[in-house]
Length: 127
Length: 173
Image (tube, rainbow over all chains, first blue to last red; front, side, top):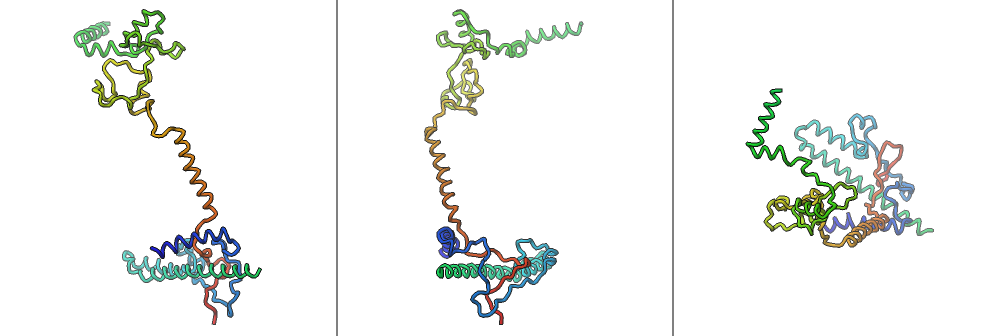
């Protein structure tokens, strides 16, 4: 409960406050990062890859909002459900893999936000 | 013609031999409910008061201003809700006694309708301030909180196949 309140209420409220009070060092949650993604890395970062093409996703009827970097796991999960019907409970591993992928994606977005914030702070300090 | 005569005789027999049928047919038509003309002399007033079951001093007709009330008495307004529920009314559903004169707008002031005697728990001006206070308070809180919209610290979701490169946090070998 305490962790939940801290993560979902306290931090989010303070985010809102900081965006209002210090907009120069707080990235906006609806805008993509403006800094160079490769800045500060000794070697180039790995590019996130999509394993399916637009046509494959269309033919699988994956909704637009789900055509992210976890679409291949979702595709596997949906295919499994169709194969194993009426026993979709046997698709638990696929579902688990999909949710884990979503979690990793969430963590990556958190990291990107924090990276953007720190770069903004550094830029602000230099001025 | 003989059929008309026969039926008329039959109706007369029915009406005279059967008092209920006679009452239903010969009385309580709309023309019988209609008030008479506005009373001008004192005798007419007395007759009208007696017709409506009032004493002469209590009888006061509506103003003769063309509203068509005629000699109908202007009775005090009492709503059904405000009348005593424990009094043994002759007609408890309407809270009305037998032969009691009805208000001209009686159907407007029944228990299921408007209550003219209604007393508010708080005066209306206070209700107005309560309402505006609550609404204004909510709008002020809303307007102030517009600047502090909470959000999780995340960048927008990254979608592939839009001609934009996204990176993981691992570096190439």
